[in-house]
Length: 461
Image (cartoon, rainbow, N blue to C red; front, side, top):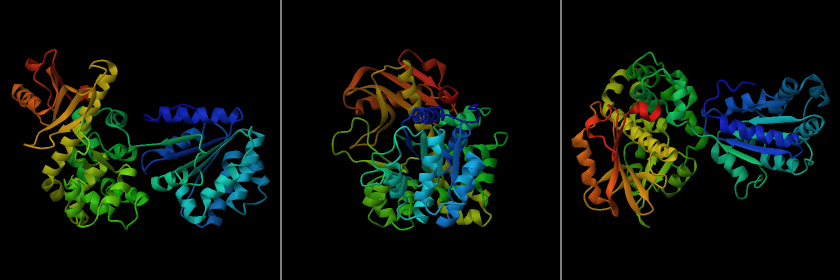
């Protein structure tokens, strides 16, 4: 089957194919795939299932008996009428169903995909233990590939983590994350690079969001349609994504909202959300929703900052969240206009992330020294000072980078501002490399062997 339609999931598809080949050679494979809603898990697995004999079952939030009846229908679709007839009209339990599927695989290689497994853990208490009991008795030589997939990351990780029923049993685990800008570019290839970055800043790396963005319309028109109108996908989808991950208890939304409003220090988040935040932050970091950041090369004990790790959710909390009632009341146009400063700050943060990612690709390709490690840096004390991309060679600061989301090209004045920051960084080399990234580009006259300049088309194509 052609891989057309898959965007930057080639490695995951190759890993799945390798697992299936190992099963066909006689080593049964238990595969766990997880990642938050909208990242393309079901699309990837549907593509994979269509290549060979497979039973693809998508769980719903229904009773166990209903789900087992739907599984029989999936067997009929994927393995044929004869296989379904062998089930004798249905399955009495999930244990019976899984044992039947293992027996069916013994006749001929079979892939079984159970999508949205967390729904099954809700309707069938002890579901993971049932899978364990069956899997532990699947005979070597059985060409079975069993894939468990889910969007509730905490539930999936609990199944295979310490104390989980399936700990140590998966032969392959795949966690799918939202696409990075260079990966997401394939969804909107005709857009000008700067306009695409605006689309990405609102949509994040979620394929369904990117497909909804109309490249023929302006950013403002897309924001009004998708985020500034009741029912718009960018307005509504965050709630669904978060509901898969988080309970209503725990104050998680208050913590996310505080960070979205720019409260990045532990004490600031606690004060803004009016609660203890140790446990909520730990849960949010584990779920990949919040990132704990330290300045690169920071000494032990340096104070961390906390930031939203997902571009779409950062947009939702930082730009939309406080004004959702007004948008739902039909005032989306006024909200989008009023929140322009918040939107521009968010664009700046997304552009800085894209610049750091570009620097790492330049290092990997050999265009920058291969022994550099790049990340953000900020002064821990004294007058505030931040460097968007600092490159360290062991403990020496070799590269200084600045990213500006501004329409005019960066010029000698901007370079001088960056150069003045060198004295604030410990152990800077005498002749560092300076890198400038600008939405409007970088003036040609300031470039040299030690001053590099890039614009959006260089960063994402």
